[in-house]
Length: 222
Length: 302
Image (cartoon, rainbow over all chains, first blue to last red; front, side):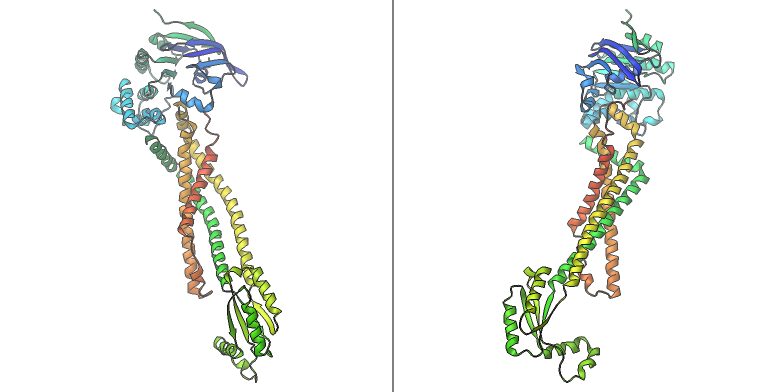
C-alpha cells in the first residue's frame, strides 16, 4: 500500500528525513513516534503529496508520488482521510457541512451524502450535533468531527498527525478508541504521535524516528 | 447539481466577508465602463449626427447674372447628366429675393433701395446617397465650377469633414482610455479577489487537503469576479443613462442646437447588455489572473 525506498527530504540543506525505507501493508495500524522535529509530519506530507522527496522513491497505492502530476494529487488525496492536531475545520459551517465537504468535492449526490455523513457522525458519537457550528464546540468534539470528515468517504488510508495533541487524558482515550474501531473495520491507519500512552493503547506497529532517521520498527505486542 | 450550488454559495460568502473591497471593485469597474461608455455614447451620437448632416448636404451652383435662358438650360442639362446629383431644383433671382425676405426680415432694408435684384439665380443640388463621401462631393463641385455660366459653387463640406475628424479622434480616444482603464480595473478586481483568497487561506488549505482540485477552489473566486464585474457594468449603465437624460433635458430647456435632441440616442438594448457582459468578462479575467498560480497543491498543505 505504502512503500518508501531510501527517501530523504531536505529543507534549506537541513535534513528532515534521511534514507528512510519502509513498507506499510493494507489494513495495518502504524504508529509513527519520535520527538518534535523528528520528521513525522514531513513523512506524512510526503505520503499525501504535499512534498516531493529530494532522494528516493515513494509509492502510494502503486503510484509514484514524485512523478505524480500536480493535477492528479487531489484524486490521490480523495482515497485518504486526514485527522490533524489543530482539527482544520471550517468554524462558520455546521458539523454536517464540514463532514460533507469531501463528498461535495467528489460530486456525491445529496441523498448519498446525507446517508454517509449520518453514518460517519454516528461512528464518532456526534450524530445528535449535526446542525451545531464547529466554531463553538469543545476540542474533543471538534476532533471527533475531524475524524468523521476523515472517514466519511471510506478512505483506504487514514493519516493522523498528532490527533490527541490538544486533548486531555480522558478525551485522548476516547479518540484512541475511535481509531481502534476505524482500524478494526479494515482501514489502514498511520498515526503520528509523541504521546506514549497513545502508542501503548493503539497496540500497532511502531516506527520510531529520530532526527530524520528511522531508528526502530517494532511490530504490535502479542 | 449540489457542487455548482456549493460553488455559487461560496462566491456569495466571499462577496459578503469582503464587503469594503468588493464595493471598491464595483465602483472602479463602474467608473471604467462609464468612461468607456461615455466615449462610446459621444462617438455614436456624433457619428449619427455626421451621417444625418452628410445626408442633407447640398451643393449650390450660382448662375452668372448675365446668363441667358439658354445657358441656364445648358447648366440644368449638364447637372441632370451627373450621376452624383440626386434631386435638383432651380431658384430664380425672384425666388431668391423672396426667400431672403422670409429668412432675414430685419435685413430686408439692406437691399430695398437697390434698383436691381442683387441676388443670383442658383441650382440647388441634393447629393445622391451613393456619392455622399466627401471626395465625391468635392469632385462634383469642381466639375460644376467648369460649367459655362456658373459663377460660383458653394457647399458646406469643411465643417462636416471636421466633424468626421472629431468622430475619428473620439474613436481613438475611446480605445486608448478604454484600454488604460481596463488595465486599472483588472488590477483592482484582481487585488480584491486575491484579498478574499488570502482571507480564506486556511479554508483553501483544508479544501486542498481533502482532495479539491484547483478548478474547484478557483471557481467561487471566478464567480465572485464575474458578479462584481456585472454589478459594476450595471451601475455604469445606470449612471450613463442618468447623465444622458440629464444632458438631453438641459439641451432641450436651453433651446440651443434646436432639433439636436431628437438626433441623440442612448445605447440600444444589445449594446447595454454588452456593457454589463463586458464588466462580467473584466471581472472573470481579473479573478482568473488573481487565482491562477495560487492553485498549487504541493508545498502548501497542512
